[in-house]
Each structure stands twice: as structure tokens, then as C-alpha cells.
Length: 418
Image (cartoon, rainbow, N blue to C red; front, side, top):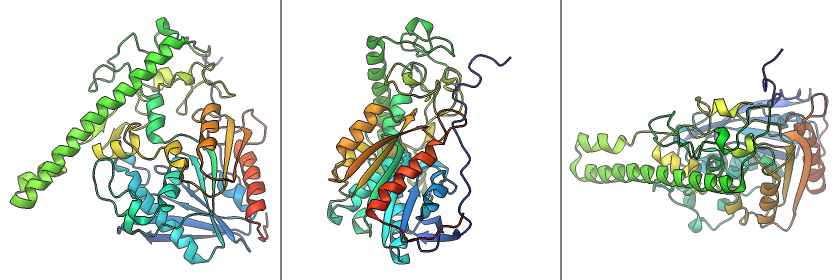
């Protein structure tokens, strides 16, 4: 007999389908406007005239589940990593925009008729931020990170894609972290410290042991979310203090050239953020109801994984916290950026998503500035798995919706051999 809750949320990840036999794959190394090196894979099929760009700020999309789905419908696919790859400790979204710009420029020069950006999960906010900035007059683009680090977006060539496709988009790394961070932590240096009045896994607050859904009162939910924002604010203050100390030391070093000042400028340290798997919706399925399984993106027992090493934004530099993980400081907020997106948009919502909820999807599609935008819902989980074992995967259903939408705007003449 399996233990209670052992298989809850199972099947979050799926293996991508095989690519068509006619697929040609090539690897490319690119240099960004500011001199960083990034790499990507181009997969194409004979006759493909439109290429889809798949990129995530902190995940490797080389073998993403949408790759074969788009290829078999006759579209080429470009997958690319940012300069930080899978190590998001130093991830600055403003630099990631330069990485994405290098990929878009390469694809334009390669000769594709159309380039379409595809955002899944956190890749959606990255793509939306990129399009917002690329659509601006260069002089109006962001020129520093939230922490003040110069980033030459105003001097960079940033081609605007012809369309934007989204699958299971979430609101952005910072806004997502705000939803999952545990506000009951009372000591940032003690992962076991807890305020029982805010503890999401305290039965006195409405938690029930799995597989039962918990039930939190509206009052608790309101106080919990206020406290989550307060914790983000406190970490922001720490990050800004460290950034300011480094800036003062750099300024001194420019005059003194003293190694002591140089060391202090480099010693901003890292911020450790404990317990970031504590979204109330993971265990109370009545909040923002959809067809999601019990559990979080990280597992079926968030009451346990919350105390482990998994989670968002666990170790980060002060600069990266402000640019990527802070709901208050990061600019990579999908809804904030969406108004600047004027290209056609398709948003594919997965009905069992554990990160993008129905109200999120509605708010996102409403926020986009495009006159050509559509919102469809297909059965599936956040990473593209089927809702029910044995059914068609969410990734395949999303790929079919995307192909239909693309075909009306960017018809393909590709010949696909499976």
C-alpha cells in the first residue's frame, strides 16, 4: 500500500515526442551586444519559412516539449539559453534581453520570413519584457538594472518578433515568488523559524494533511498575502543596502585604487531565501479553482518540500534579487510589460496549471496592447503533461492550437516527414 499523497501531482514532467525524420539540427554560438557568449540550437524542416523562438531566463529549453509539436506542423524552432544558463544566482533580466536580442538578430539574418517568440512559464515574462523594450525607441529603453548596473539596451539592435505565443505563462519570476514565499519565517538565517499565526502548514490555520484539501479563511489568506509582500520588502531593503555599499566602494576605488576598496566592491555576497514553496493554492484547491492536482510545481508535499532546498530564488546576488526575484523591483512582470506588446498574441491556458490560474490568464490577455489577441484553454498541467493518464498531453494540445493560429497568420510550405 502506498503512503497517503504519494502519487499526488504525479506526471508533472513528460518526455518530448520524437522530432520529424526530416529535421535538420545545427548548433550556433552567438556574441551579444555587450560581448557575452550564448548558444542555441536551430531545428528546421524542409521549406520552413517561420521560426519559433523558445527561451527561458533560467531553464534549458533545448529539448522542450513544444519543439517536436511545432516542427511537425512545419515550423522551425530555435532554442537558446541565457548567459547564466541553469545557474540563476546572478541572473539579470536586463542582460537576458541582450541575450534574446542576439538570437532574434541571428534568425533574421539567417533568412526566415517570420520570427515568432514562444514563452512557456517564466519564458513568457521574459519574452513580453523583451518585446516591450524592443518596441520602444532606443533612447527610451531601460539602461540600468533595478540595482543600478549599466546595461546597454539603448545601443543594442533588438528585432521585434512578428508574433507572441504563450503556453502556461506565469506572471514573472518576482511576482511568482511573492505567491510562494513563506511569510511565517521569523529569522532569515534560520530555516526552521516560524510564526505559528502565519504558518500555512499549521492545522490551526486551516491546513489538513494530504490528500485532503486544506481550507483557509478569507481573513487568513488576506493576512498571509500581506505578510508575503512585507517579507519581500524586507529582503529588498537588505539587497539595496548591499548594492549601495558595493557602489560606494567602487567609487572609492576609482580614486584610491586600493585593493581593500576593490575587495569591498566585489563582496556584496549572496542572499539566501528560505522556504519558497508555500503557495496556499497548492494545498487549498478551492482558492482560484481550476483542474490542478494537489501539490506545487516542486512536488506533492509542499508542507515538506518547503523546508528543503528546492524552490524559487533560494540563493541569489543582491543585484539578481532586485532584477529577477523581487515582486516590488523586478521589471520582468508580464502584466506590467504587456501593454507595450502590439504584435499578435495567442495565450494557451492549461486547465490544470499550478502557476497560471484562470484569473491570471484573463488579466494577461486583457493587458496586452495588441489588437490581435486570442485566449484558448486546453486540458493539461503546467509542464505540458496530460491531466489524466492516457489522454493527449497538454503540450500536444497546445501545439495544435498554436499551429492553427500560426497557419492563419504565417502559413507554412514546409514538407514534414515523420
